[in-house]
Length: 583
Image 1 (cartoon, rainbow, N blue to C red):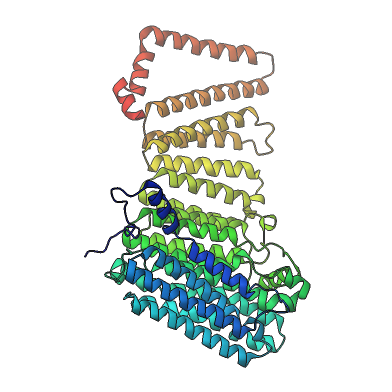
Image 2 (cartoon, rainbow, N blue to C red):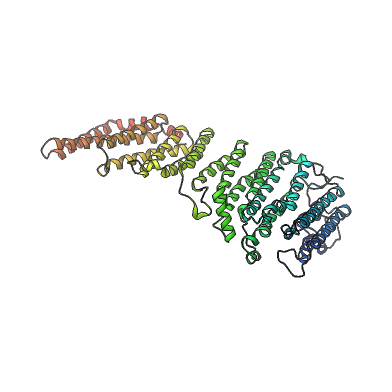
C-alpha cells in the first residue's frame, strides 16, 4: 500500500452515517493530540525537577529513574499507536516530547557535578545510554531509516546534552569563575558545530531519507527532530548558566531569582548554523521562501547580539571580559553575517549580494571594543561605507541596474561626510559631499540608459546649473580667489556639454542652451562692470542697457525670420524623436 505524502493523510475521514459531533470531537482530540505533552508536563512537575530545593525532593537517581521510565513508556506507546493504528501524527508528537524528557534527564545530575563528580558521571552515563537506547528502540521497532549522515550528528548532540558538564568540572573544582563562564559560553558554539555537521545530509536533499519507512516527506522527517533537539540544546545553554554560574558569581538569592549571564547573543552560533542549513536547503530545492528565511535569519541574529551593559553583576562582569578579550558579540555576528552573505552571493542566492552590501555598511557604526547596545554605537566610520559603495557600484555596473548604483551613491556620500580628510579641506564639507554626489549621479546617468539613469541625468544637470547660478550670485561671499568663480562656471558648462554629447536629448540640449545664455549674459555683465571700473564716468549703466537692447533687437529679427523656430526644431528634434528620447 502506498504511503501518503501528507503526514496528516492518516486522519480518518467520516463515513456515511457517522455523527458530525463525533467527527468534530475526534479531530480536536487526535489531531493535534495535546494530552501526551500534558501528561509529560505533569510528570516533570511531580518530580520537582525545577531548580528549587524542597526538603522532600527526590534524589537525583530517583529523578532519573522516574523520568527515564516515563520516557520508556512513551516510546512503547509510540510504537503501539503506529503498529496498531498507524497514527503517525501522534507518534511525531511523542518523539518531540521524548527529546524534552532527555533534557530533563540531563538536568538531574547538575547538582552533583561539583560535589560528587563520580556519582554525577554514573548518572549522566546512564542517562545518555537510556536516551540512545530509547532512540534506537524507536528506530528499529518502527522500521525508520535514519542514515549515518543524520544519526551521527544526532548522537553528537545528545552527547553534548548529557556530558558537557564534565568540560566545566576542572574550573568548577578550582573555583575559577572566569574559566567557568568561558566554558559555558563555548557550549552554543559546539552546538552550532554539531549543527553544521548536518550540512552533507542537507546537501543530498530528499534522496538522503527517501523510503524512510514513514509517511513523512522531506522536511517533516528527520528535520523536525533536529529542530526540536536544537531548541532543547538552547535551553540546556540557559540551564548551564543557572546551574554552574549563578550561585557562585551572584550568590544563592540571585540564583533563586534565575539571574545569570545568559543573553540572547548566546544563541547566535546556533542560529547561524541554522541559516547555513536553510541556505543549502533553499539552493538545493530552489525554494524561494526557504532562501528568504535563510537570508533574513542573520539579520535577526545581529539584532539579538547586542548584549547590553549587564542585567546583574555577573552579566556585567562577563560582558566586560568579552569586550576586553574577543570583542563585542554584535561585531562578531555582523562579521559572520558578511561572510555568510558573501558565500551566499557567490553561490547565486537571489538577493544575497544586497544583504552583503548592507552588512558591510552596518560595520560603519559597530565598534569591536565598545558596542554593546544602541546607545554605544560608534561615530560613522568611512571605510566600511566606501567598501559597500564599491561593491554596490561594481554589482550595479555588471547587472546594469541603476538602483544598486544609487545605493552606492548614498554610501559614498555618507562616507565622504565622515571622512576626516574632507574635513581638513578649505572648502566646506557639505559642498564637497554635494559635488561628489552630483558627479556620481551624472556618471551613472551617462553609463546607463534606463529610466532611473535618465532621471539622474536630468537631476544632476539641473543641480549643477543651480550651483553655478548660486556661485555667481554669491561670489562675493565666497572667500576664494577671483578666478574661482569663472573657472567653476566654465567647468560646470563643460560637464553639461559632455553629458549632452554622450547622451543627447532634447531636455539636456535645452539645458545646455540655457547655461550658455546664462554664461554669455554673465560675461556681458562682468565686462560692463570692468569697463565702469576702468573708465571714469557714469556711462557704465547706459552702456549695459545699450548691449541689452542690441540683443533684444537681434532676438526680434531672428523671430521674424523664423530662425528661432528652426533652431528649436533642430535642437529638440521632432515630436517622435522627443518621445523616443524621453521613454
